[in-house]
Image (cartoon, rainbow over all chains, first blue to last red; front, side, top):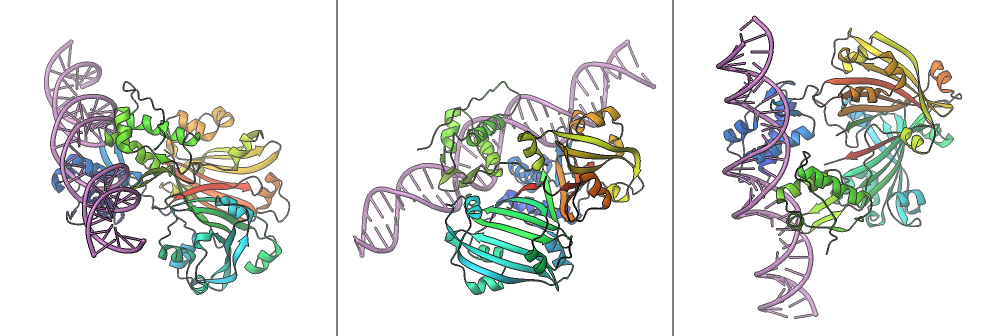
Length: 246
Length: 246
DNA sequence: CGTCAATATTTGTTCGGACATTATGAACTA
DNA sequence: TAGTTCATAATGTCCGAACAAATATTGACG
């Protein structure tokens, strides 16, 4: 027998039924109402109980399966995945952990150039090499210790951002407010020796390595949103990547 | 008007129709038959032309959308994504690039221990801390230059692997042959200073940094498959990660 | 008592249909 | 001419149904 989880479906809501269901099921798993390994109510029963069609229920379940929360086996049934992997990919880093742990993060603008020409950045965004880009160089601090140097390039159609905004708010915050949302990002993560300037800005001891990341981000239509060239103190950052292989 | 791509559906095949379709559409995009920005044949037309139902066609398209190859916009239509991101996530690295470029890769076993106890590895796999694990330490070479040191731990139920296999074949090859397939992996990528032993094994100059990665891999049911603790020469490796944000 | 075959259960695939929602462009009106 | 309205076309949601395939259970039989 499987546990019946309480679900409320609002048919007058504009949010799709399968999504309402998926959300509530997700919550049941993440809050521990359903434990890893627990059998999951079968599709037919769920559909009958909630007065939904089987395709709708299947779609909701498929969403959770895609996120690794559920495991389906034909002829057997559906169970809650043994290892509940928290889906913290995104553009995550140790940074968020620092924030959660209470370390005060801050950013400091080192340079703004609205007409920077950088062939590498331009090409990565699919633009002509001599396209002037909005260039932004910042230093990120974790409390009192420097943590990272962030260089970012934005395409021309996003170049009309307020200086004051740039100085006070996070880059992704600003983009979000403009309705620009990076949906897919291609990142390359590596390590190298720091330059002397980087050593100075990050307060590195001699021999300390640097963790580097370059990122190309695109919106849902594949239009370039940002090119970033970042380097991090090795003892402040690590990249947390969840990879699915199908 | 949109280009009609040739598609052949085999109804006698055991592979699902939607998957057959998805495969062939993917190929058309990746081979450049369909260019970024091109309009995509609409669902109804595709369904009529191939004599498939609309849900089947939709499912195939949904697969491509999920991989970022297509963009759907309600009321407008479907188009090929502007930036075709090659789906090289997986467990990829510069390694494969080296192989493609003709550098001869090889692996050398440094140590095998069938009853290694490692609390960190065991805990990461959800096992008791004193569980004896199969431990494997290898050095990977790119031609004549050392490139990485790979330490791996396998859970007890996979510990009965042949020594000869371990020495001659890749780890993932062996697992695949046993029907074990890692489906989800959680990786943490960082950098640090090498130990003296690492410096020796990798032939590092003083001050050279180290790129590190730890990985926990699980199969489709969430059972642990492998724990890995790797370190790479910074000039031989970089991690290539594609991230989707929904 | 052990083995094998029939049966039930559960998920997987495919279809057809209906209506909703959104964007584009054309026709119409002020 | 400028603005609005409306038809059209495309994707989005939801339903009901049927059959296929894989697995577990049960029961019959030796």
